[in-house]
Image 1 (cartoon, helix red, strand yellow):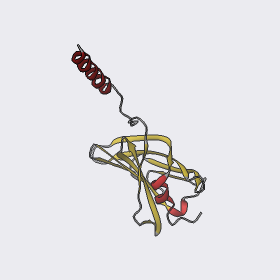
Image 2 (image 1 turned 90 degrees about the vertical axis):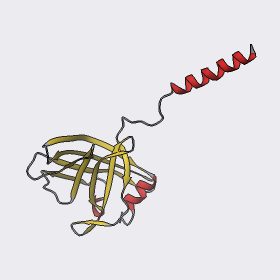
Image 3 (image 1 turned 180 degrees about the horizontal axis):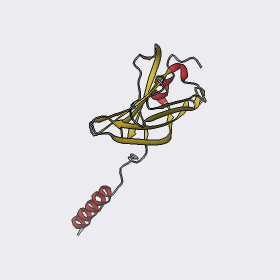
Image 4 (image 1 turned 135 degrees about the vertical axis):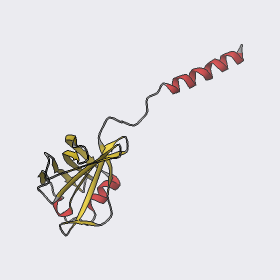
Length: 159
């Protein structure tokens, strides 16, 4: 009888464990990485913020580090602003801004607080796959940067 109860208890514990939800939020867009390698946009030091779902990179947004000031709004319509770059990768398909298509990209520095160790940026984009003219659109989304991503964002930035 005791063995039967122990076996039943173990079975119940494993059954309940299998029903638990995963701990990550696969539905929420988040910052995957902020680049820490040195590259330039129009001769100025720049940074790339890579965002996606469930640790899968989807969109990347690049801007000059000199534009990392609260209130800065960078917009590009049909690849018209060389100081802001956006692209995306979905299932091995590459999406870009294009002068010949209805595309756009937007980055706004909503908050930049090195004392509180947080930054918030709003990003949005409409990109095109040039091979098949398929579009991907990201509505304006506010993202929070902390920890190592914030350090990479702010490295060598004059506040």
